[in-house]
Image 1 (cartoon, helix red, strand yellow):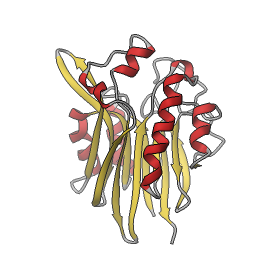
Image 2: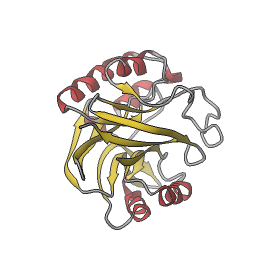
Image 3: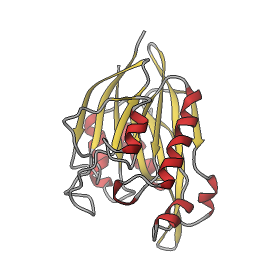
Length: 244
């Protein structure tokens, strides 16, 4: 059994909370979204000297005159057997500086990918994947999300058994989240109705359960708990076991 944390950290904005949170929780595996590449050393320091990671950029931002890569990462205190990155939107989004001025520019100037690792355990290995799915206005399904969720499922299909975490930008109970949950097990308890931390999110309270931990039947995901006060999204903590 390994302890996993899933968290969208909103760039560097909440590092003063994220770093001590990881230090205190002592997870075996951490999946992060909106991770600035330049901040990876801070995450490694929080986890300890044996930590390894894989990172996939999603957008390139212009910050104070410098181009900053931001994306998703999987960190582990257990050794990697292998890593992977599978894009399910146009990789040429990384040719542009991120533009969030409207939904079309948003989609044009980013790329979405599944980032993952096969992680060695005492019982073999576990496959952990993470993603930051396509954003939409108001959490409503649109043409981009409908296309991209099918591409995401196509990418996942040949990957065998896994645990998939992420910020899915699609509220539970609505079309896109349901499309994923029809294929994979949704392990977040129903008592959690939002993963947006209203005290830290720029939009305040939103009734959107958009962060998730999905799995195939080969895995058991237990003790799933939500912790707020860390970032603009709440953290999910879970224990992962590969069934024999």
